Length: 425
Ligand code: FA5
Ligand code: MG
Image 1: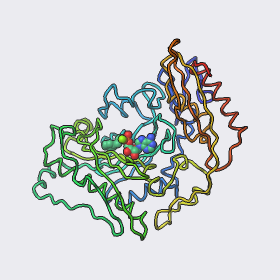
Image 2: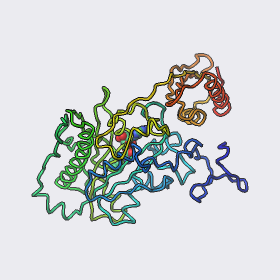
Image 3: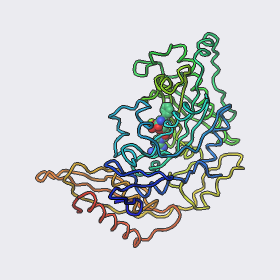
Image 4: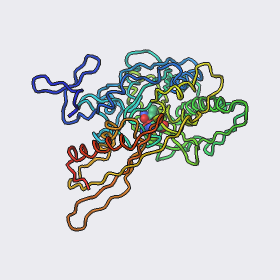
C-alpha cells in the first residue's frame, strides 16, 4: 500500500534505508510523508532557527561533548525495553509511533542514544540532538517530526559521597534585565509519588538534583536573557513532578506562554539499573530532554510549527548566525484558510484518528493546518458511529484556490472510504 516506497522481492515487501532492508510485517506503518522527512536534519542546517538554538544551548554548557548525527532508525528494544519502558506503555503501539517492522522503528526520543554513548564512548557530559518521530494530532504546535536535545551528566559516585558534606548550594545567577518568577523555586519535595531509588542515598540525590536544576535554569536564563535584548523581560517558569520509566525522581519544566503553561522539557535522576546494565555502575547522573521547537517558538514568537519546514526565504532569512540578539519573527503573510468537513459512518471500532491524520498529511502535505473532530455520535438503532472531522487547509507562503483544495479533499474522501472501510456521509 505504500506505492513507490516499497519494493517487492520474492513476494516479501521491504523498504530500504541507508543500504539496510527492513521487511514489512504487521507493524509497518511509516508513511511516504515521514520517509520524505528523514535526512532533512534541520538541527544541522546552518542558520536554521533550530540549528541556531542548538548552538546557543551548546554555548551554555561547559565541558560537554555534542552529538547530532545518530541515525533515526533504531531497534525497538533500544527505544523502549532497555530504557525500562513497560510492555503496555502507549508509545509502543502502532497508533502512537512509526515502525519499519516489529524490530525497527523511528526513534520517539533522544533518550534512546544515551545507550550508544554509555557503551561506546567514555564520556560523562554530553548532549544528543536529533529529529524524533511520533504519531500525533495536527495543529499549530504538533508535527509528526520534531527535535529534541538530550543533556546528560554522569558523576563518579565516590566523588559525590565525598563532597556531600561540603556541598554549597548557589542558586543559578539571573542575568541582568531578566526577571524570573519561579513559583516552585525549591525542587518539588522528594515525595512518595516521586521517590528516590533504593540504590541512592538522599544526600546523593539532593546533590545531583541540585546540579540538574542549576544547569537547566542556567540554560533557560541565558536563552531568555538574549531574547530580552536590552529591555526588561520576565520569564515565568515552574518545576513540576513528572514520571518517566528511565528516571526517578523526575520533573518537567513549564514556561508560561500565551496564557498557558507550556511544557518545554522532561528530566530526572537516571535509573541506576540502566547505568548498571550499560557498564556504568560507578556513576550516577541526571538527564533531560529539551523540546527544541517549543523553545524556539517561545523565543522567536514563531506561531506555527510548520514554519520550521518552510523553504521560503521570507522565513529562513529572518534568522542569521551573526545575530547578536534573538530575532522576533515578523509574519510575512497570513493567507486565508479553506475549511472542509468530512463525515462518515464507521461500523468497526478499529478506526484510529492517527491513521486519518497521517493520510491527510500524505495527501495535503503542509497545506494542512489542523484536523479536529467536530462531531461524533452513535446511531441508537444501528449502533454505528458517525464522525465528522474539520480540516483547515492553509498555505504558509501563498494563496490556495478552492479548486486545488477540492481536488485534495476528493482524494481524501476516496482514500478514507477505501482504506478505513467506512461509509462516507
Ligand atoms: C521525553 O521524550 C523524555 N525522553 C524526556 C526525558 C529525557 C526525561 C531524559 C527524563 C530524562 P516527553 O515526551 O515529555 O519526554 O518529551 C520531551 C519534550 O519534547 C517535551 O517537554 C516537549 O517540549 C517536547 N515535545 C514532546 N512532544 C512534542 C510534540 N508532539 N511536538 C513538539 N514538541 C514535543
Ligand atoms: Mg512530557
